Image 1 (tube, rainbow, N blue to C red):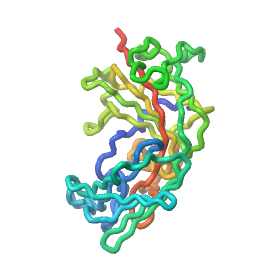
Image 2: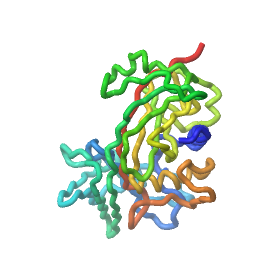
Image 3: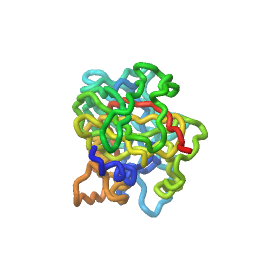
Length: 307
């Protein structure tokens, strides 16, 4: 990631918690099936959502748009995993009991059928992603100031390790990744304390009222030589924090670089100059939405406020 990039990442950032309807893009005239399903390598098969699009003159209603009577399946080779509708939340579908973990470099297929309509898609999961090390470097000289403890070394003890106490605005956090085949990368920061204090009141202007700055994702990253640099500009709270890096499949990468939120804010780092997408690049046939996959690894630390 180049030195000029961090400001762009935060300015174009979007919430890690997608709001209902955020996948719809431009509103369609006719109601279409909309799917929201993301697989994470080494995690269990996830819950997913099936809803319908609405016309622009109809107020969004999660209950009204949820599809409760679809047949939903995920297939891996000859294995078929039948999903069941959640009786408490229309449109939410749950995996079978004791679901398997998502495997790397494996093709998964999604099939949705309801009322004579069919939606389908496929994703090939990326390699496992591993953080080789995380270091704090001097911005001017590039000198390594310290090497942070990893979760593999210390577990949740990373938040107590002296090396992982980062003074706000001191140095730059640099995350070194092991080589992995992926279409692109994203990173997100998560504040883990229940009532964190703001590290900089001036950052309020960059967030909408309905956004949660304690969970903030970048657009696709340009990862240079396997290195991600996380800017202080993207840090909103003091206390225990975690940066999670995602290696994306092609579907997730295409959606992330073309979604409407990032285009309105100047485009994500993964887009090209002149890209003006009227709607995101969806990864499914017979409807709208995202069926994608990623692998992830994390770095934990504590943001210490300056006097």
